Amino acid sequence: MDPITQASRQLELLNRSMDDRSVEDARRAAIARDEEFARLQFLAKANQFVALWGDFASRLNEKQTFDVKLAKKLAKAFHELETSEGWPIRDQMASTTHGK
Image (cartoon, rainbow, N blue to C red; front, side, top):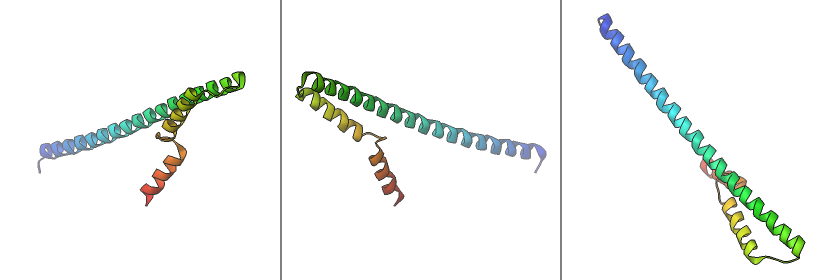
């Protein structure tokens, strides 16, 4: 094989290798973005639940009344939180079922 053909083949192999790395780097970056997005969504839902819980507790303590509408909002916020990605029990169950 002449030196030009050999160099050309080596360059092609190097380019393929770099393309493979670029694809893998892009895949890792996409996974990291998805994980960060899920984390931020979970934190937003947790913050919403905490804010509603604070309102509920304040009204209960200050007015000595049970606000049914606020209780329903609180229950809904908790349900959204516990069914979201990032909820500890849900994540444990998912990891044990994927491991089997």
